[in-house]
Amino acid sequence: MQTVNPRSVEARGIIGLADAYLNNRNHDEGATILQLLTLSMCGGLQGLLKCPDVVSRHWEYLIGTSRADMVLFHIDNSVSIIEAKGPKKTAVEAASGIGQLLVYGATLPTAIGYVPTRLNLILAFPRLGNKDDEYALDVACNTAGVVPLRLASPEQVFQFADDEMAEIVTRG
Image (cartoon, rainbow, N blue to C red; front, side, top):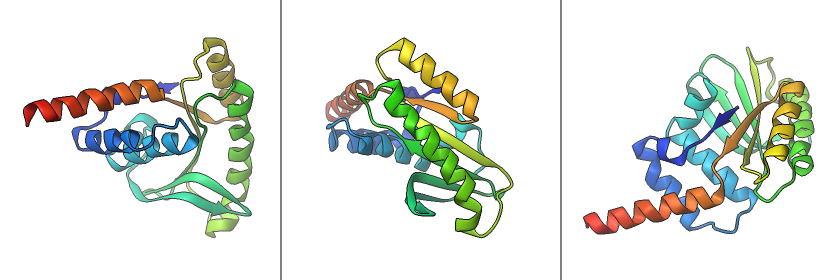
C-alpha cells in the first residue's frame, strides 16, 4: 500500500495541487482525479507506483463501452489504468472500482490494438476515515491483483494548499 503525503510532491507540482484543490473543494471524485493528474504531471505518481516514464496520459479514456478515469501509456509499452473513487465512500462502494478495473484490463488490448508489456490496474482513493474499511479495501485489491493507491484526504490537501498559499503571500 502506498500512501501519498501531499508534502512529498515535487516542488513544481505543489502549486498545481494547491490550485486544483482551492478551486474544487466539493469532495467529489473530480477532486481525486485532480490529485492524480497533478501527481502524474510532476512525476510523483510514477515514483509512487514505480512505473516507467509516461509517454502519454489520458483521463476519461474510452475502453470498450466504458471510460477509465485515467490511463497512462509508458515508455516500455506498459499501460497503467487508474480508477478513482471519491471521498466519503464506504469500502463496498470504493471496491466497485476493482470490478471496473478488471473489465478495463480484459478489454484494453482490443481498444488499443496491442497487448501491453505489462498492465497495472490501480484503484486510487482518499482515506476512507475508517481503518477497518481501509484494510478491507486493501485486502480486496491485493486479492484481485489491483494496486491500492491511498491518496491524501481532502482535508489534508486543503490544509496543505492553505499553508502553501499563506507562505506565498507572506513571502510576497
